[in-house]
Length: 391
Ligand code: FAD
Image (cartoon, rainbow, N blue to C red; front, side):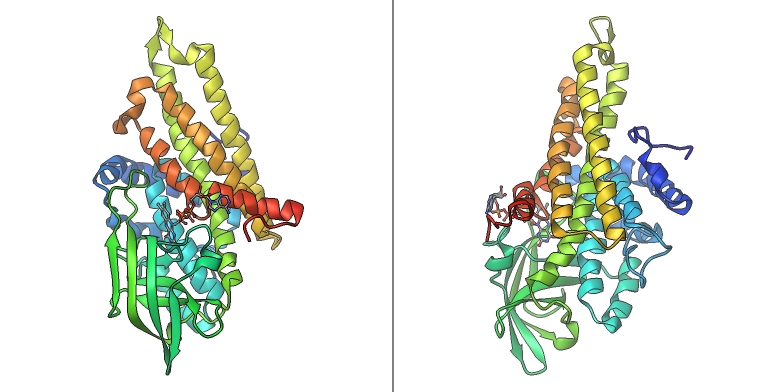
């Protein structure tokens, strides 16, 4: 391909189809033209640029994995690469896509009936209907499988939901929220599409966030919220089915970590070529070259890992521990890469306008959400040893 991402040192992008490369370039151009100029400003104001939602749908970034919502035949490798391109410019916007396209549409696609897929996926793909995904609770994060306290009780033809959710992305402006709740009957996890207009439902923005500031995270309270049975996702019968969706999205968070790393690294490279100290560009000093070389090593190794975990998905061979390792590895390498990149800019590295500190700060949320690095490491540990350290 002619327009190769400069940070794509080993030309990995050549493994995408010509149509996928074309779509990748469209995403890159859109993000450079429409997102980069406003990203720092929205981040600083902690607001989400909602005018981007329809264009994100237009680019085919919402629901590209599913027949009902995809614009063209594509591979998991392309979908991952699209995450990379988005977060290279703005990880908050790519998190919006991760929630809408991955967690919400993924829940509908994996857990919904054919009729529900047909009803919801197309309108979510255009951004006409915005979703959020509510699993985490005030008292349960890493242990959400066993610690789920939100309860769904069968009542007549519907369900009554009571409980609280925390950290729920997009929830301040979403139309519908996938709520994971424990069935008071069989004790298993169930999932419901809860309209945010339902009586008894409230969402309050979490203030003071210093990472992914543009993402609107909310505390949700559900007080006797009545949900008809048609809004239950019938194929979610236990937490195991929720974990299927998380496996898919975790692999994409690994891609997001690579993109966030590249954003910081590219700012560092540009700076190192220009900034002079001791009478020459800092990029000519050995220690600065070593930092940049280590960043590129992290990025290159992470892309290789992500491509393979996506290939396993395309081949129907991806396991939980595969995407857990990708998430754990890529986010750990990201933390190093954004710190080293920030370091290259010296004092100027802490200024928002120099396009590196936002990536540095955003790395912290990416490291911890969709299963912390530690929890993903334990999923891998369980596969290696046959013993669960967190059961
Ligand atoms: P805790 O579970 O309290 O963990 C705290 C620390 O203890 C971590 O370091 C963890 O690794 C460690 N720890 C816990 N248990 C163990 C153990 N057994 N062994 C070793 N270490 C352990 N959730 C949603 O449902 N929907 C969303 O849209 C959403 N968006 C988010 C967006 C952001 C910006 C953030 C920050 C979070 C979001 N989350 C969302 C929640 C996210 O998934 C949780 O924060 C994450 O799962 C970790 O849970 P916790 O924060 O409660 O940390």
